[in-house]
Image 1: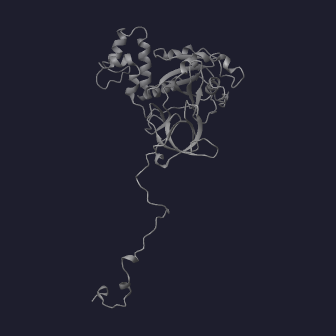
Image 2 (image 1 turned 90 degrees about the vertical axis):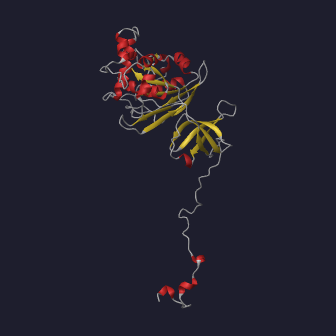
Image 3 (image 1 turned 180 degrees about the horizontal axis):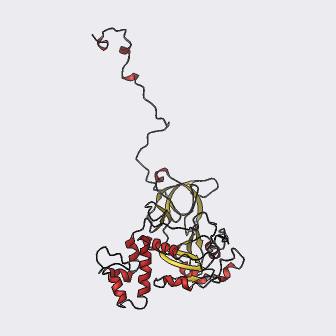
Length: 356
């Protein structure tokens, strides 16, 4: 007989039953998680103005008498989703904005646009910069630092891909003639603003050389994201548009020709103009702008007249100078697009060449 078949009543194993089973407690000391989530029907809508180390400055009750700012944290269920400046979000908890209070972001509302960039052109991992902007103000300097056509091309590609309307502001035009640089974009329907300020930093008369009325007219009623290379005078421009913004300004290194990163965060600022209110979203200066996430087809869509002609192109046509039987190239060569045809084709091909 085996030991487990013994009839000995004194054996200790006869003293155990199912009540003797020990269950290991939850090591985290909390209740098991559930997939059930509350509906948060009492949530209030807010605009994200800025992000700082996991805390979000939000605007609650926008455009009402009770409008106020509050501080919020992101709910755990959103830990894999980026909440960025410009987002419209749902808040629960204490959204009063009183000192020491903290609301909780539980939902991100549907976004109309997303401005993104990647680390480089081969990196498919994208970084969302701004949500819900409908305009992009590209700021470049005519000199000090020298304007970079290829960087502006990349901004334009990102704007067209996101469905955002681009604008161009050239600062420091008192230091160099911007015409040769602007000739690169003659074929684009691109509004251009010229400013003589930016060379001297935050001097008192900085607003004198900025076409404020033209800019106010263009920016009123829009959410505009301002982008640009470090040192081009973007923060000076933003301070002129929003006098109480107090964005830090810097100078260009005389040896390297590069500007310092004076704006370290992306922030939304309300823009008050004679033509109505708007928002200007200031972003940190960058020296590169990866486009690994961009769909080439969206670039052609931005050139509506050329896109219509492209329907007659061979399948898989690149529209680049060496593309065989390209309908766009043939139409331009035949003069069907008028005087601006060659310039528009050149602009399209230069933007498409960023992916070649």
